[in-house]
Image (cartoon, rainbow, N blue to C red; front, side, top):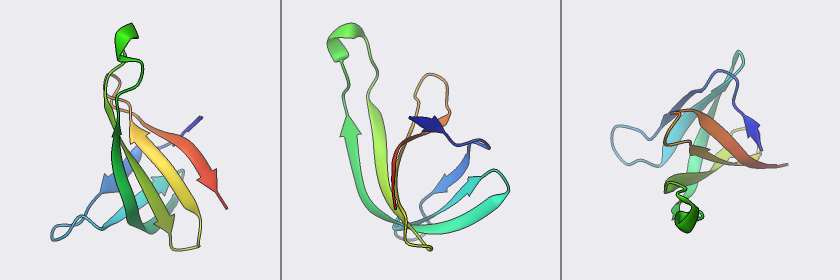
Amino acid sequence: MGQITSRSINIGSAKNQSRCEVQSDAKLSRAHILEVWVETGRWWQGEERRTCYRLLTEDGKVLEIYKEPSAGEWCVLRWID
């Protein structure tokens, strides 16, 4: 699991929550939100719920991300080329 360096990701658009921008390092990419789901994690061990997003970037990569609830940082679950 990797972290997005700049932690600057904007999820959603003003109208329909179907697009977003992903900024990692100095690169800005636009993406479509393919799926949104909530993971409860290991709740019995005190893990917080987190909302996950599956994105399709404009260069054809699929990216799954979530925002770490306690730290407020965006993390990558997986990249699919």
